[in-house]
Structures are given as C-alpha cells and as structure tokens.
Length: 517
Figure 1 (cartoon, helix red, strand yellow):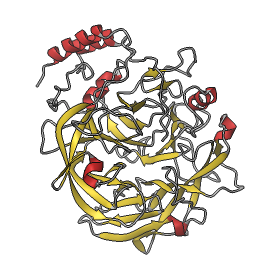
Figure 2 (figure 1 turned 30 degrees about the vertical axis):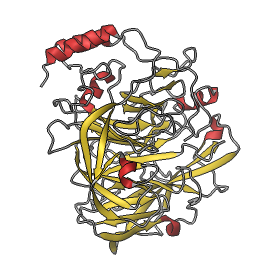
Figure 3 (figure 1 turned 90 degrees about the vertical axis):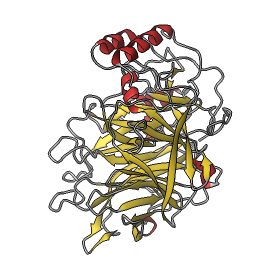
Figure 4 (figure 1 turned 135 degrees about the horizontal axis):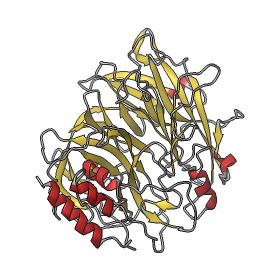
C-alpha cells in the first residue's frame, strides 16, 4: 500500500506541473483489470425497467419499476411475488407513450418511506412514485414557463404517495393515491429533462433531522444549451425546482401536501443547484462521516460528470458543463463546485476499442466494494446508457480531489455474462446498454436494463464508504496517474492540499458538437 508521504509528494508534483488550466478535453477513461461478472436473477414482463430497490422491511423483497407503470415484487430467491402496483390502472392520469423513443415518459422512479415497516408511524406503508401524467387544467406547483422556460409543448410529472393494502403486503391499495407535487415542463423537446431519481437517506435514523426527508432530482426542462441566458438564470435561482435536487418532507402538513424542512439551505424546497439532468443519485459517507449524495449529471455537448452533492452546493449548469467553463463573463449565484469524475463524449465503448463520439449519457453512482477482491473496495460504480460501457472510479480519491477542484479518473471495466465478455450491451446482445443499478436489503448490487427483461445480480456490495485500498491496476497504470493523483488527508497531505487548491480544471471548449439525448 502506498504511504501517505509518497502520495502527498506525488500530489504536490502533479499539482505544480498542472497548475495552469488546460485547453484539453477531459482525459480518456483508463482501462481497468477488473471484470464485473453478472448472474441472471429473475425476469420481469414490464416495458423499460427503470429502478430496482427494496422496502427495508425485513422481507428481503426487491422491487423493479418499469416505465409502462408496473412495479414488480420479487422474493429473495428471485421468485416473482406479482405486480405490487400498476399505475396504468391505479392512476387515471398516468401517461406512457409506448411509441416514443425518449426516456422521460411513464413511471420514472419509486421510493419507500423509511418508516414503511414501522407501524404507528406516519410513514408506515407508504410508497412514492414519480411519473408522467396527462396535461390538465390543474395548476402545477411549479411550471418552468414561469421561470423563463421557452418552448412549444408541455410535459407534466407528478410525485404521488400510495399506501400498502392492509390486507395484502404484496399489493399497494390502488385507491390510496395522494398527489404530493405537480411539475410542468415547458419545452421545445420531447425529452424535457424532467423528474429524476427520488430517494430517502438510508443512513438517517429515527429522530435525526434527515430521517423521512425525500430527495428529488429535477432536470432543467431542456430549453437549450449553455448559450441560453434563461437556462442559466433558471438553473441557478433557488426559488424554482428546475436543474436542482430538492429535499422535502413528503408527508401531509395540515392542508399542505408536503412541508419544507427548516434546515434546507435556501429556505425553499431546493437542496442543491446547477445540475442539468442528475437523473440518478445515491447516498454515501465522506471522510468525516457526513452523508453526501453521489450524483451523475448527464451533459449536453461535451462532458458527463459525477458530483459530490452537499447542501447548498452549486454545480455550475448552465455556465459549466463538467469542469468546462463556457462563459467566464456570466455570473453565477455563488461559486460553482467542479465534478469529481468526468469524461468526454468521444470514449471507447469497451476495453480495446478506439475512442468514438456519439450519444452519451451517464448513469449510476453507487459506492460499492467486492468482498472477494481486496483491490476493488470503495469504488463508484456507473455506466454510459447508450454505449453500454460500465465504469468505476475510486471514491476515496474522489473525496480528496473534491477539495482542490480536480477530477478522479474513470476506469472502463469488462463485463462477463456466461461465456460472453465485452461491455454491458455486448453481453446483452443489444444496441444500447441502458444499465440501471440497485441494491437489496443486504446491500447486494443488481443491474437492470431498459433493453432486456432480465434482472442481473453482481458480486458487489453497496457500502457507501470511502476505503483506503491498493489501487486496481489497469493496463495503463494505477490510480496514481496524472488524471488520478492520490491526495493524502491530514498531516503533510493537508498542507499540500492547500497548495493544490489553486488548481482548477476549467477550460473553454472548441467547436462543440450537439449531442441529442
């Protein structure tokens, strides 16, 4: 294992050598020696699987949601327990455009209240869904048109609370729906960057401030790129939910459908700003034991990124994409935090392939470990949706570079399913990968895809913890490369961190190509 002194000296040398901002794009992902093996676990009959999660109720069940509106329940052994809820039947306003190729449609994500299994608590038996609904005359809680949103069409999404059937724990009462929030996205696009992940903090215990608080990712409404002033204004202002992560208490508060926690950083629903399309996030612990969000933000033109999201943080959109600064004269509302991991839109789809441009969209962000591989500990697991590329990055290192405005290297891994190897799309035999990640109560990591009806189990465990471990050796070197410096925390390393704090990786791009997602 590398010593703290050696890591600190490496960081110092690299920091001085690269103290002048570069005009280069993010460096290419490196090649990992790690192979992720998949094992078929179960099958589902829905269309476009979006999320896999659990109720934390001691049952061992997992739940898979599909854009067509069904949530399927499975026992620990993979046997199906039936349809938990079918929104196509339960919500008369539910909308799913089966013929559309765009991702923002139908049922997006689900979340179980942390008190789901605690009888007598207000959150007992409550499930939340984020899904598309039909347009109506009902006033939305928020409409992007009121905050500078341009366009010629509208898409509407609702956050809805449901209750479990008291006579059947394997079913949600279809008559129990209560609308919590209604969002209207005024846009030029059929792909409006709308409602993303919804989740509760799994680390928060009863009685703690974050227990029962629902985090909600909301996209920017897709009104254009970084060059549009209205996009920057809406994304930066904390008085609206667009291009943000929200934090609310979703339980009813008198005659109000939800309440705003008193400790929210802006006094509004907003928890963090400047995120273009953070479609998925997870929770993890930092080096001080504080809970953070690890959020994958889908880029527009050039860069995909992972952010360590903290309360009140500003992540730069629509002036920054990744760490690229498009308009230095345009003012932000507070300093932007650069990502901790990023990659460009011309990357290899698999190990051994040549970099190639095209459709690119990041997904994932689980901090995982392989109990059978000491070198694969505390890694951020993520992938690229269209390409099927699965990647990882060192979470401990990402937390270190967060302090100095640098980025940790992403590593492309090999995927193995039976006798097939390649990327995720290769082993599925599909054009796209569309990988989504989830965990069960024991922390076992699963992968699902919109391209297949199979639920895959991996050997990884969700830990959410930064682990100091020997680097995973890649075919091009270890994590100690120029784009993957390791910074020691504490002692000499802390002093060198101060020296590196002036290093920023913000540069103007040259002739960006439009990437339509």
